[in-house]
Image 1: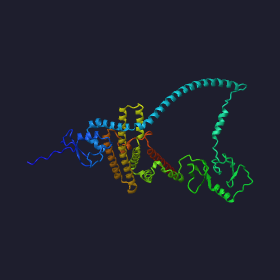
Image 2 (image 1 turned 90 degrees about the horizontal axis):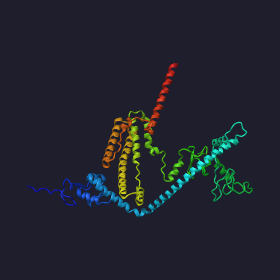
Image 3 (image 1 turned 135 degrees about the vertical axis):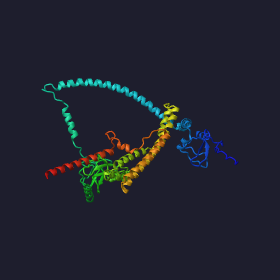
Image 4 (image 1 turned 180 degrees about the horizontal axis):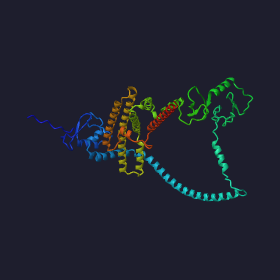
Length: 490
């Protein structure tokens, strides 16, 4: 009889595997096998966020999904959880000396706030008392004034009537344009009045050549340079001053709206008034680029021409297709998914600093602190996992709808692609639910289409569709009435 093959053993303790405490755990990267006891002991001695393989030649990190699948529920929810709480707390304790200044500052602020609240309460009580006394005195004064003002008159006239009328007239007055032109004097930051006199240095400027005269308005010694007079006339004809800072701006072409790159202000070239709505002058976007900011034409369009084409198609050629409602709902869900995917990969140092301050001030017990750190770590991992799936759906939905514009609209093919994408993403959501024991709302295009639209749950896209349908119905009704009138005349 051939000898029996030796039973596999643990690569760490060399004990034979079994189905309980010595159950084998296999590294997903290198395939090395260790028993469950050694695996759990290794995790309890590991202080890094991502434990690595015990095989030094492999040394690759073990993902949390692998750890959760290999750990028992009791070990994962109690022993390992307590270990992670202690590791996170010890890590934060090492930062306590550096946080002492923040804690002292917060303590001082809290003491100052308490003292300020006490002063405020006393002042408020005194203010209420004085206010009541003043109101009583005002009632007496009004009664006396009524007797005096009505003396010798046949009827009482409200003395505030003229004041109110004047106030209303003042409100109705249109705002007048302000003459704003910077003073040409060196090292002077003042502006000229309509008399071309600087309000800061009191010097006059020639209105014809724009040269500085001095402190005398009519200076006999001043002679205008013909070239400067011609330049000033040209500027007057082809340039205008910014209504806010006074810098001269020339208009080459484009719309009425201008943008001053000196004070970053938009204004109307025709009226000279400051722009009240969105600024769309090209110079505005040049300034944004110079500031290192994103010159997006419309935030709702994500700065993507493809998205604009899709929106136009949904509101245009695809409007009459049977698949329109399905595509519009998929597009709306894609926008929602992008919002979910915009989870900030924020640096949580500030939240942890606040917790350290509370711990140092005695506002947070150590057990509560450890639990809060562990919950924060779990919340971040859950948000990141959910955002990754949302990004998959957003990118896939955009790709599917974009293909319609190039390959045409095949109802069955498009619907099947969307359903496959939804099925895949919901399966990923299911894995995340099992890992974190939390519920995630699944993606369901059909259910949202069947949901009755009310004023409370109507989205912006649905409102646009509703208005377009109403306009189309009104146009059809107008056409029907016109045809009926023509038929009667005939």
